[in-house]
Length: 327
Image (cartoon, rainbow, N blue to C red; front, side, top):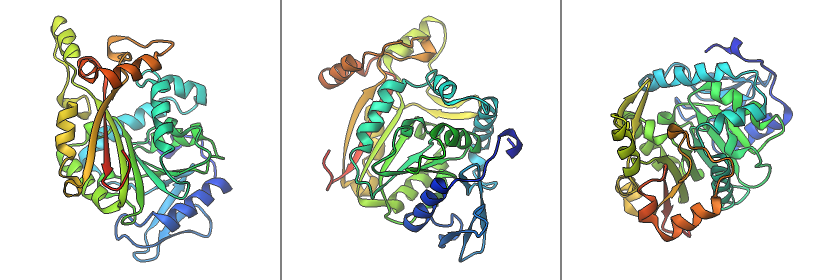
């Protein structure tokens, strides 16, 4: 997707102030890890070490410049979808999101996660997409939203608005995080880790080990290979997609136990891992999208009968917490 697909505007004062703060606190050159500064014309960011320049387009800092070949098809697919909605307003964008995510339950989860952190801390959202989780976050911890799709990020900037200075949007490769060591307090990610090819996932884990503080919290959501879903698909003579390519994207659905085992070695096991479930009654692939989502009922079932909910829920929630943090 080319820049012409979008209506561009110079970054406003609020966005530039937020970007300057991110550069001071956490952002570094993705190539040499050098110190960055905003150019005199405020249309790019420059590295003091290797002299590379990175453009700022429509309020988005662009680090990704031709790399990420392992997910090139995925990126092109997401950019093409975003280009179809460039003229959509915020309400329409949220309606598009609601086709694939249960907005009420996930916004509530994001609010709870965000409230855990001090206003001076930084949260990293890998695969921020349209940024809709953070639309109402005007106070509290600051958020660095990273996505390989520039199209997604431009739509996110429009949805979040020019005045939202708590969210900094960066087009970058998750396998080469442009972030200073031990600078991130929290990681949030929704249905992204399931799409990483093995070689990308290995690099992402190494990057997280480098950038997360000693005290951290991670909360990740991915699709669940629920037994009920498998049965329903079999009844229609199909198989639930769990591993392999689904169109241009890699997909690996893992159960809660599999994700817990995956994260167990992280930081040499000096963590506590808890698993839960969400979007119990939201299954867009089965055309189930309740108009009034029963959030209270979901929370009760997840807390009291997790083994039952594991049979039919849509998402696995994994929380990885450093030993020094409260669960």
